[in-house]
Length: 259
Ligand SMILES: Nc1ncnc2c1ncn2[C@@H]1O[C@H](COP(=O)(O)OP(=O)(O)OP(=O)(O)O)[C@@H](O)[C@H]1O
Image 1: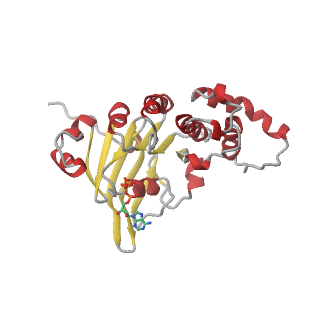
Image 2: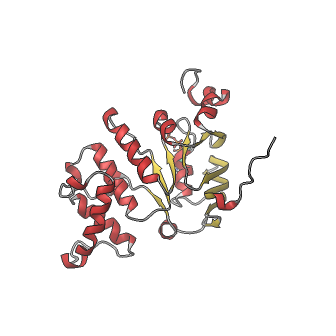
Image 3: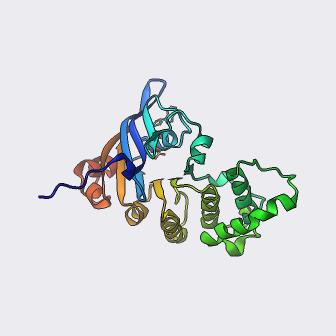
């Protein structure tokens, strides 16, 4: 039988090597090895308390690991700050609370563009200095289906559209590797399909890692899935592989029909 092609570091945009995090002696994440293939959408799933958020925060440099390394395009970024890794193209989604509720969609995206250009947002910036960003901001709103909502404030948007706005502000930072934390959390059924399609669309040409509880979104979107349990990797594979794995069925859901 022909051997599978060798993978090399260049095949992976993001890697965790023996990643660990202890909180006061409690190992929330232990010895995690994760390789996110360039151009793929990869999910991190697991039961409550499995260590997904801690792992996500380690990868996005919001937390400093107790052990191990994080590599971006093979480069060790373990000791860089979030802002430094963002400049290298690793960007995590903003939470809804991080969008400015009383600014319009256009203004929110413009703020993100300004921060991407290395300028901090100033409410007193003369309008003439930010207007050149309007075209770019409108393009981003167009990409996420919010062009017609450009003049609405974030508070006037439905929950699903707020998430789309959050994705537009993430795209404003020109991510090559995009990390999305529970993009469908708290969403009504009607918003899940459009946001899944939006993530599929904006993931094209990028590498995406998502932490997601909704398994139908994961099966729909993700080529590879890593299952965490008790802070460790239980299994990694395609959705079909992990959903048939006995250990995953027992550990993750406690029932054969659950996945
Ligand atoms: N700052 C902290 N201090 C102490 N323990 C923590 C801290 N953050 C997380 N933990 C613990 O680490 C473990 C993993 O938590 P984490 O939030 O990463 O899991 P999770 O898989 O994201 O869970 P959920 O799906 O419920 O959000 C849990 O037992 C949690 O209580």
